[in-house]
Amino acid sequence: MFTEKDIQGLGYFEVMSLSETIELLSRNTLHCWMIYVKGTIYELYHKHSIFDEYHHQTDYGSLFDCILDIVLHDEYQMNGRKNPKYNAKSYVDELITIYR
Image (cartoon, rainbow, N blue to C red; front, side, top):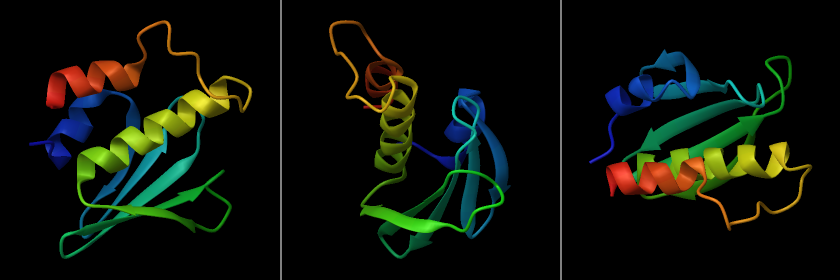
């Protein structure tokens, strides 16, 4: 199972808050993310800089799926807003191998 401690150990994020809400700063894109846990639902919010307001991105059933969405979003942004090419292994592939 993927936990909040796993997030801290990734080195992928700067962890801004680990409480009722999880706030993360992507070290790759400097986009901010907030994960709000509502029962069994994880609501994912996003903003492009620390000065913007969060907007709702999507909902998931696990913390791990939220992290995968963030990493996929980063890959999309870093690839010039084009879908990543999947001939090479990505960080998403690595996370799935480790945590699934």
